[in-house]
Image (cartoon, rainbow, N blue to C red; front, side, top):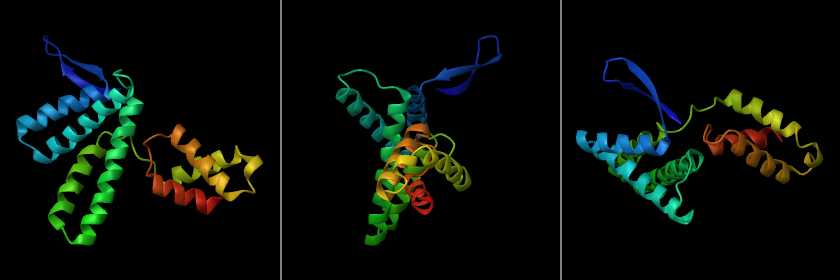
Amino acid sequence: MRESWVRTPSGSLNILKMKLQEQIQKDFITAMKAKDLNAKAALSSVKAKITEAEKANGNQPIDDSQVLKVITSAIKQRKQSIEAFELAGRSELVNKETDEMLVLERYLPKQMSKEEIENAVRTLIQGFPEIATNRNALVGRTMGAFNKQFQGQADPQLVKSVIESLA
């Protein structure tokens, strides 16, 4: 749930709890009205992926955690596109993808610092003493536990590198 300030008819401000999907729809409409093409394109693609996820879920609405997974996936896709466009020398497409990625990152929870990630990983690793000798199993299990506990709060590549350095 996201919090938004809403002005009541009496003029006072109230906090309105809004689902992530509702916030995306609201921001999409705002981007359309403002003629913000990058935000509109990014939010439109995420809305389409959310619809696909709902259809895969038996036409049932998805919750915020699943919407967050869709957004994370879209950001990952844009990062891969940026790398490919950089290799191809397509700077205009790099800029477009970067702008769209920045729009989507607004919907992610606050990102953890490297120190916070290291502390969390140390705690998680201590919870798996039975596989401490098998490095690959330890990395996989720690990565899974981290993603479950801190969903969307850290870059998976950074988390993996921290886990590998501590394992």
